Length: 141
Length: 326
Image (tube, each protein chain N blue to C red):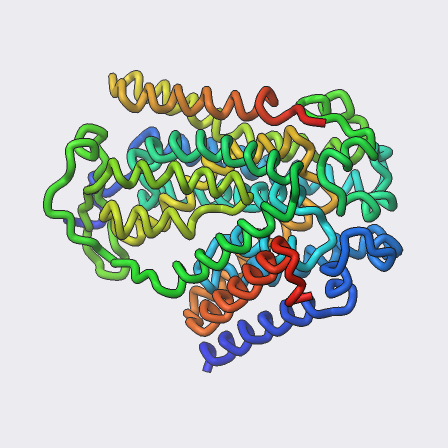
């Protein structure tokens, strides 16, 4: 078979997934760099003072949250004017990219009437949304 | 000439990492989590050391053919003053960022395969949530439990890397019913052999079952799971090595997403140490790929396996409270 044969090329949905993922990842990494710069330069004040962190990053997460009065779950969205929580935008974007890409897959598989992979993709979106929602991992301190 | 210089560079990077691990500040960090010597250091000291450490780690990980997460968690939890809760959370973010960055290229070149990845990802990501929750629960009871289990797992991974012999193009005579029903098969172009390679799977059910365990371990310890994905795809399910490696890397972007959200929501990601880790490892990986293009230093792989054994025994020693290794 020739190298340029169509059978060797990635499927349409695979290429679409790759393109959207690439844009999202680049945006996430740039955001992470910019927000970290803002955090380090102190343009926005931090919720937890940087000089205090070395005293608490050796504690377990429950103690850390208690000592620093840090919220958990999606409560960080209320503290976006704080330099440290601003960084969460980049983390969240990276964490949400897979869901966005899966939504595109669902559309593609439905068009092809590939019901098995439509179901798998929908279930995966549900799993990721439950994980991201904070219902399962947000409590506990 | 060039190869020997690159091998020398690899050796020098390894020595640099060894020096970082044995420098007095880091050695003290392993003694106790609340040592005054640690808290008296300026806030920027540890993130800066971590960045350099991760940069070196990224280069070595690529040269050794392992993911960043599997080296990051045992080494950083063993040699830095951060609690293992944060190390696991950030370890997942590190593995996730690396997998997301690699995903588009692998998908476009048709090396990572969606039909293979999607069913497996559903199982692994669901189980990684359970693993992450179990890990956080056990850690709240006693972090030594996690530390000891991590140590045992890392030693197991080092053995797996040392002894498993992957097959470039496994022979699958007959595809099983599940593989056929899900259409898990494909074709890719092998640049090295200048030929197209068709593949299909067998023992698919057993392979899917294995991803329950892999997902649990990935979430429990915050490790990327490439070390386990590849042998299952390649040796058990009969997927060619190139497709196995690529699909495994892509798979991590899904599996680690679900577990990373659990840790992120729980507050286990401290930006001051997360960003230098992610950026350091990614830059290191880019450098590593460039070096790897001209040389294949097998020696580095054995050195990294040695480091994994050391980190595993250290974690086990710390978790069991034996105190043999400081």
